[in-house]
Image 1 (cartoon, rainbow, N blue to C red):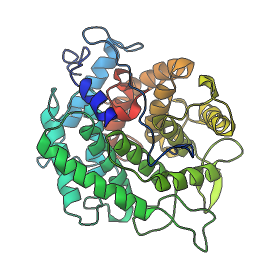
Image 2 (image 1 turned 135 degrees about the horizontal axis):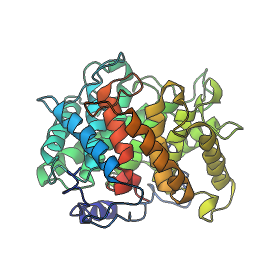
Image 3 (image 1 turned 60 degrees about the vertical axis):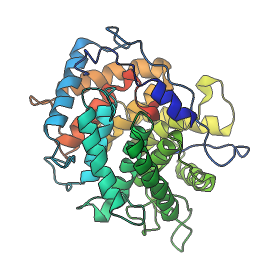
Amino acid sequence: MAARQVHRARRGLRRHAGTLSVGCAVAIVAAALFACWPCPPKAVAAPPGPVLPEMMDQKTIKAIDRGLKYLVGTQRNNGAWFSGTGGYGIYPVVMTSLSGVALLASGSTPESGPYAKNLTRAMNYVLNVAEAHTDGLIAGPGAESRSMYGHGFGMLFLAQCYGTDVNTKYEKRIKKVLEKAVKLTARAQSDLGPQQKHAGGWIYTPSGRGDEGSVTVTQLQALRACRNAGIKVPKSTIDRAVAYLKYCQNADGGICYSARSRGGSRPAISAAAIACFYAAGVYDRATGGKGSEAEMVERLVEYVRRTAMPESSGGGHWFYTQLYMGMGMYQRGGKDWAQYYPRIKAKLISMQMPDGSWNGDSVGTTYGAALATIVLQLPYGYLPICQR
């Protein structure tokens, strides 16, 4: 529970924001470890008060503030968000969870801060959806054919809430929901079959038994968030996922779409892999590590440097790509973060619409506003999943 204690010790910090208008794929787990991942080191937050984190400025703060105001202004009475404009369906659990993470990234929690009430309503919505399922699935209406996305992002959001500060009533509810959700994720992991070359990934539904990259990274990051919050995660689930993603790395360093179909590397999935590596405490050679696993991470970093920077197209998934690139580069730090953040900041500010939203990947304005504000707020260092 040390990670939760760290997060709670940090909950009083409100850098410029109280005035700021408040403004994975993989984890490489050594065989000597015990039942779960190790907790990451304590994050170093920027100082509270009027001192902004490095590379942030008032123009960025204004863009963040407008984006968050757009989100709270579009929250439904039941606490949910829907996708807004776009043709991919409403996916209320996904949109609510991502919007909730964006509000948490500002420094608010369900118990304190200017967005506390919005977060409590969002948390209640996701909990109510989860509690309506007896099997542990977290997925709302309209998402039946892609329910594991909602499940993964719902786990991530609830784990971030659980890892900050919530009252005892919510602690008990969240813990029960997350324990059941982790068990469902473990059960849904793919097994070897006639058409499968490797097991250990996830596909769109719990009973699908197949695999594909975007669902797999969603589940891995959610499992890491749960572990950070003190929820037990089976080591065997992680070991199998590690083997799966290692198998999916191509010669160019990137991650392919699926172990079943392979094909070329995908920038979006590869960027997500970087974020999950660092969330899991796996560091590359730039930090002094050596060996095949460290070299694997470095080859992956080189691939995303070439294909997933803000100037890239993202293959139609630009916002998704930049969400994970932002997380990965922030956790990597150093010159990579120093080169990345000014570029993504300028790009996102130039793309913001008059109402404060972003139309993200043709999915909708809720999705775009949530992902954009999460990335812009990474320098705050409030999200437990993005600890350095």
